[in-house]
Length: 240
Figure 1 (cartoon, one colour):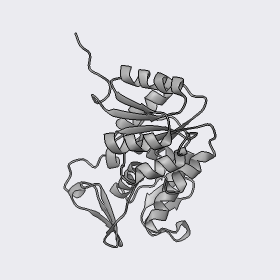
Figure 2: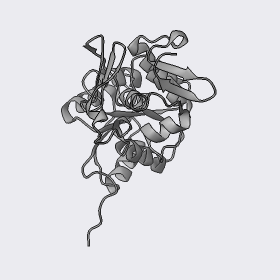
Figure 3: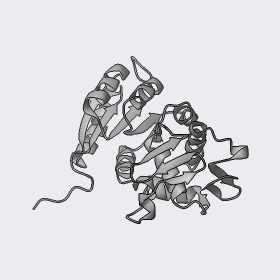
């Protein structure tokens, strides 16, 4: 009797990792979990594979020959909104990865358990998109906040009539906040809504993504028009 895979069949994961033994170990674990995997060992080949294969998730090490991981992530973001999970030996690099228009979604730090990394892949692929707006009539109508329009069905965001390019995580955070504008979300609540209940990591990641989202929206946190910091709680949608 066959058993149902715990993940979506043939979800594609691209592993860009120059340590060949580690890359093959990650690929083997993912294959056993029902994923289709591709391995590349340098940045140039990794970008090419991402363009040609359209993976659902990219696992990206920073210390790559050819192109470093930051540049690889930046180039991938020009043509793909796949999830990017970075592997880094230094947690201080996370702010750079997410804050400088690079657009990584999650990270693990070395040394790490391969099982933990596979669990992260499973978590991002199970993430509820856009705060799960459901089938209500309200969800069929774009949410408007001044000159910002958030479309939950089309998963699109427009500012002054122009599309705003967001990463999957930025879009999910905005959709979650916009769906319930009167609610102040704690970081823990945002993690549960956007990353899913199985995610384990540093809550600081929420602040980094929010800061980058604000920059894309031209939103000053001291004079917020769209995303307001609620002291002692977290964030809510709307002007301060």
